[in-house]
Image 1 (tube, rainbow, N blue to C red):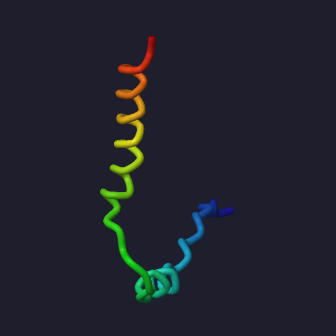
Image 2: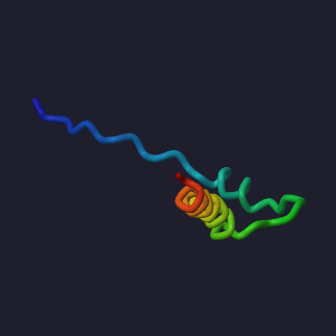
Length: 55
């Protein structure tokens, strides 16, 4: 008897997903660096306030 290899299934095509993300949406666009930097800056400001106002 010949041994058969169990091959992994092929990945699904991402063609439809790429077309979905290529569609232009309405609204304003924000740079991802700004989205990440705002929460980080708020955390740093809260730490600084806590350092200066802690008894």
